[in-house]
Length: 232
View 1 (cartoon, helix red, strand yellow):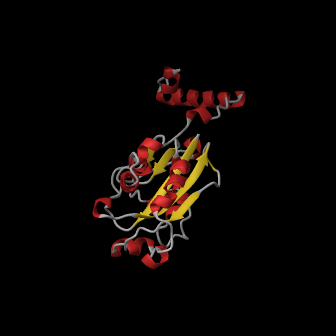
View 2: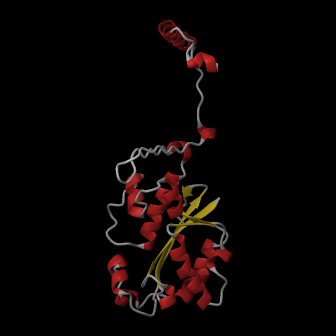
View 3: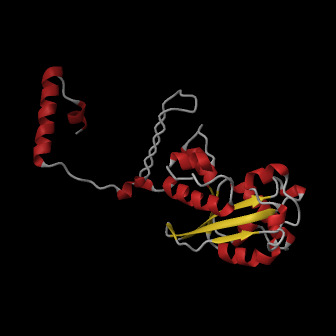
């Protein structure tokens, strides 16, 4: 199975206002393993970034001025992601920008070139309701080091998200227990287990004998058949 973890940086928040993609980073997973075959482009958006966006990504107009335009790298991007499952954190945001760029080229929407699209933010909200589910929060929760992340970068964020996604979907290797809600209130327990990977070890004869002795003691003291023996 081929999966692509994808992230973009943009000049602003809304492609309908003329904002453009300035960076795209993709990390490839093949059968849930990092292949090392990644894709990364800085892109000249032919406009300035909005002040708020510039504070997030730090990519100046001067830095991007000699980078290729989206149309120059579009074929390489489309070929790279074609038919793969795509994993994006807060997918509607990135898809809106990709669709806008594809529309400028007269192409169908991004989703028509790829396989299923997985929104890891939706996954995280389902697994951790009431919790913070930003990429930084998930890195902390799943012990993925992001200490080298001072500014947002598409390739770095894709690499972090790939690690987080693997941790979120690991099955038996991922045991998640949230014992408090965000306000320190009601107790929750969320456990993700792949039962097909569980190893069943039958009890030894001496362990069964010790267990029966405990049940005998319980039955004697309570003068009632223990629930364990009733269910058996």
